[in-house]
Length: 114
Image 1 (cartoon, one colour):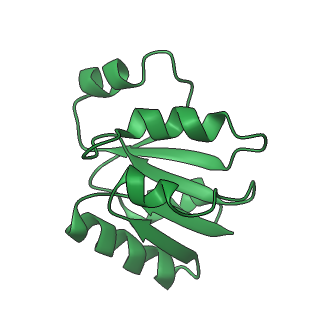
Image 2 (tube, one colour):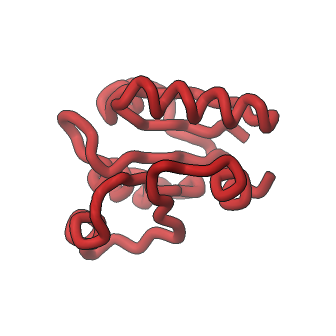
């Protein structure tokens, strides 16, 4: 399983990479949706951590794209926004998990099945 992290904040991205590596995950990080889309789509057994507020193509658009894949990966939304902003951006999108920043290692690894 590869964990794909789509996060534009370098500090958050780096922290997530270290945390996930320390929990024996293979991780790929992308600073934008556009960078993520330039790579091969994730495998069904992968997981994608996607920040809602991204420059350019937003996180909600990434989620919609992922959900249209024949066999989508596990999708975890990460956000530091208010609940109202999250609900507004996710209107019409069903997601299993929305994780609020700052993320703890225990919460993150629990949702990734470690």
